[in-house]
Amino acid sequence: MSSHPSSSPNWPAAIAAARADLAAGRPGDARDRLTSVHDDPTAPDEAVRLCASALRRLGLNAAALPLLQRLVHANPASSNAEHNLAAALGDLGEMAAAADAAKRALGKGGTAPETWLVLGRALQGQGRLAEAEAAFARSLSLRPQQIEARRDLAQLIWMRTGDAPAAMAPLDLSTVGLDLRPALAAIGAAAMIDMVGEKAAYDWLAPLLKTRSDAGLHLAAARAAGGFDPALALAHAQAATEAAPAAPDARIALATALVAAGRALEALPLLDAYIRDLPQDQYAVALRYTAWRVLSDPRALDSADYAALVRGYDLVAPDRIEAPFAWMTEAGQALARLHPFQAHPFDQSIRAGVQAPIDPRRVGEPVLDAVFEALSAPIDAYVASMAGRDDPMSRRASSDGWDMTGAWSVRLRAGGRHTDHVHPKGWVSSALHVVTPQPDPDAPRAGWLRFGAVRLGIGLSLEAEHWVEPRPGRVVLFPSWMWHGTEPFTADGERLTIAFDVQPRGRD
Image 1: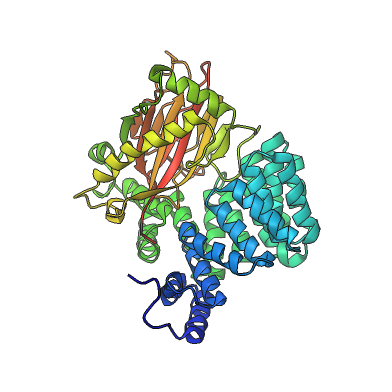
Image 2: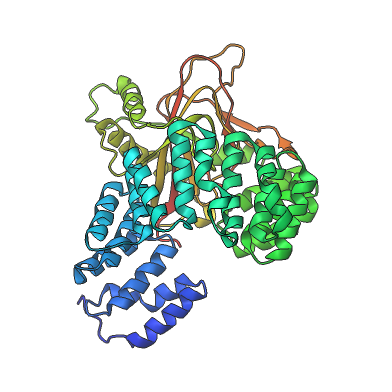
């Protein structure tokens, strides 16, 4: 088949329509209008750029990458083309390549603070933490009002040092204009929840709440208040929906606050409508299962559901592994070398532990590359097990296969745990146990993976319904919408895991 289309589209009209689609939040439509750019080497650069932008908004960075590389080749002096390539590479986890592209953008005269932000994230992903911190600081020096750079710098300081006051310095509300304070306050409150708790975060917000009232600020206040006053959290969630009734964040916050306040029956129609609009929001699916459970609805999960949806597989070492009995021990030693931090990242489930990103395609440690190779068979088996099932995850299965969309390692020390959570943007999630703590006869489930426990602040607390015993080399796969966490452990040793999310290939 010829690589040239039989007739070229009306590019000016297609470009104008695609711009309108993107402005209206319809990236799928924009992509469909411009799909001919993939096969037409004469397509205008603007059509190529808009198509790449649409693909990136859809989360299809791998599909956008050839288009962005094409733009760099066609515009060798363009710092913008290099920047866009660097950003996509970073989103794909190609941190070394992202850093190189960002540096080329700066070398071509780029001065955008966003390029320094992309560079900082790429350097952090490579473990080059001092350089990353300097890049984030440079981004802020160029544009002090840049909220994303403030958050990234604050988080990096926290993870490197565990020093909450130092981490809060970039989030000082007095350092930005009045118009940006609500957005920065929301980020600061979320950071404080992770570092020092909900009440301190709410007290930090209180002065601004007296002078400002917008949806984002009320959402931050609702999240913080949920830790100590469910009625106050509900009041803030209601205020957020009054300010922005169509905003997804406000809608789901209201449903959460209603369930936490013991009003699950009122939350259900809100959740049904929300899931109709955003069927892939895994947190919303989890919250509806929680509401069903509270109301003793027959649609709530039962033991048969857990048995079908939570599967454990013992990895088989590739043939080239000469000592498979020592495989996980070596993998644990390699993983430990990837952990440079002292504290957990913001907005994560980890307590008394740390997390490090991993590129599953090129870890750089042969034993870990072998681990990711061995994961393919269990994932294939798990996806195949969905055949014939009618549930929110199985309905998304694709005959085209699957892609691993992100991976990371978590290291928990004594007293460490994962709080109960879901993966809002996942499909299939996982826990591969590499190193496990010593057994504790006084707590037989210490360090075990648990499912079904729910904590919505102090308003709702449901006990776990299903457990899986960890052991080195066992990967557990489950729906991203399923509540999961770990039982804390105090025995000797550590809990070292690899986690990853999987998405069905070929689905938006």
